[in-house]
Image (tube, rainbow, N blue to C red; front, side):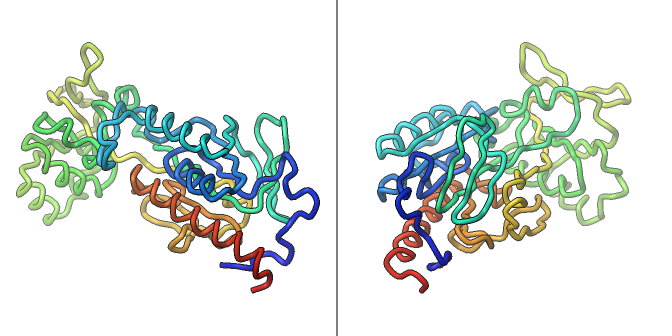
Length: 323
């Protein structure tokens, strides 16, 4: 989209200290990827990052070509170094409010400055709300996992447990059986009668054992998961437990800007086009801010797409205003 604003320049203060062509909110894979492209395109860019990446609990990330097995922390550190080479500024802070006017005015949590931007990339991601079972949060990212594509290879052939939090957990149990032939589905809060005959047949074909009853806790020894204990007192030896967290998108900024949101089975996310442009002119979104299933490699790709669209938008709004 071009010509989004009747007046898209700031006259004499175009390059004032607090004014950026683009502010990227969120410094994960999506935000840093966008910042890299923007910096290379000579855009004055600021990245505001609260330092809360979704994959922080994981020791390694997988499935990113040439970065397979790299720690998320190292990946982000290298990314920050790269974007800084192109003059991108980074600040550890949180954007608590955005006001749309002639561009955007952002309020930071620190209260030390007011930041203005012509365009925004919102890459604030989401947080995973875990089942309230003792042991789950403590081991999340190591022995308690949610994505077999991210971690399945590393735990292959171990004794798996799947903690059901909804009937859809049946599909998760069938899926993880790709990585182990020893899979037990613990129904936990799902009643046995909620499982359809088709689901039961599918579980049987996948070789998944079904255990009814509410889970009391995960057992552990020397910092590693050893089993799943039910409230009836029985304990089932397991080495890895898969869960289905409830995704909680960070939508506060989209809501304050009036962006159109869309409900999905995995949360409510802003409506975006193929480049990540939201329904608010000048605001792009990328990474887990637009969907639960955006892995690191997808998030980086989304940030790249958003940045190229923004550069084109800025250029054409200047050379062809009103078009």
